[in-house]
Image (cartoon, rainbow, N blue to C red; front, side, top):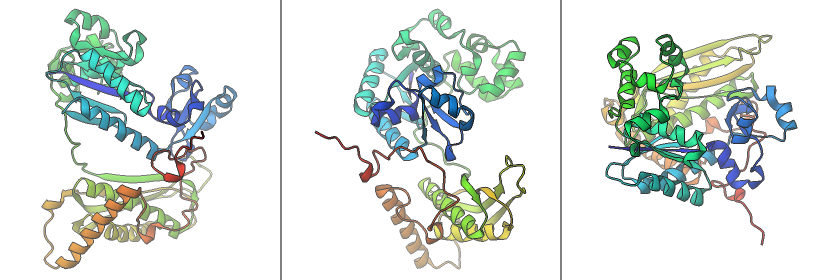
Amino acid sequence: MSFALVDCNNFYASCERVFNPKLAGKPVVVLSNNDGCVVARNAESKAMGIPMGVPWFKIEKEFRREGGIALSSNYALYADMSHRVMTLLAAFSPDQEIYSIDECFLGMAGFRELSSIGQDIREKVKRWTGLPVCVGFGATKTLAKLANHVAKKRPAWNGVCDLTALSAEAQACLIGDIEVDEVWGVGRRTAPRLAEMGITTVGQLRDADPTRIRQAFSVVLERTVRELRGESCLALEDAAPPKQQIMVSRSFGNSVHELADLQQAVAHFVGRAAEKLRSQGSCAGCLTVFIRTSPFRRDDPQYSQSLTLPLAVASDDTLELTTVATEGVRAIYRPGFPYAKAGVLLGELLGKDKVPRDLFADEHGSGRLAALMAAVDRVNGKFGRGTLKTGASTGSRGAWQMRQGRKSPCYSTRWEDLVRVRG
């Protein structure tokens, strides 16, 4: 068995550059919600030493002085470009696992000349979407991730690294000295504990005693050790497992003081959470709503509260969930506070086919509501999220809407934003 890991390079920034060639060669960063922190950087901004997660206000003056460009997150654009890439990659293998918005595993069992296939992937994705990708091949998913790291960080590999074509000695030489926190699943929290055991590189983790690693950490890290040795422990997941909880929350663009504004924001979040709930075929048994002020504004009065509300019968109905959530906000709201964030959490999720029937329910009415929700999802899927929504979530959306003063057009998902080419 062998795997490929295809990863889009600097994905958010690269998506922006596809439709705006003027960004080529310039430092570009993409900012988080409300233009708060840097969440994506292109190669030029990385070369300037811009760290991931740094607050925008701390680097704004220097970054602009160096000719840098900052953009607000354009999630509709990124999601559409991701869909295009993943659709293209599905043609290269019948076995595909979409790992994240910009990463995808492919099962490569039975394929030969993997390096050539990797270059074909790069060329096709670049030609059809304009996005650069790197490809790593390995006997396990963990090795494929490391191969992708080599392909991305070492130009000599021309964007494709096939570990399966190397001998054990050559593999050890190539990846053995990579820092251990680059291993998939290790991360910055585990790395210091491994260092205390004298494990700081990939080679040292690979050669560690799996039993000792399991006792000191977990069976998950033990599997990582075995995967580094070429023993496949992680299979491809054809579909993401259903989530056990669904949360939608957001920091506001400006402070919110009025109950009606908070309820409107929460109703908007419920609509998105319920859409996610239905997409995985689940119903929620309870709903938690929370509101809070900003802990960073220490001169402001502080207040934070949440409330969990059980549902008599588990539901995926946006209307019912909205009613519960807005009443929950009313119960925990206190006047006189500048609220900075709110959110909803759907819990106790069950498959829709496992929800106990309500003896007192109106079967005809329930059927009509289910058909209504299905119609809403179809319309929003075809014409864009938010095309149809509840009345409780509509209005001015004044203070609570996100600040996105640097957002690029939705080039591929909105007719009025299509690029116009003049002859």
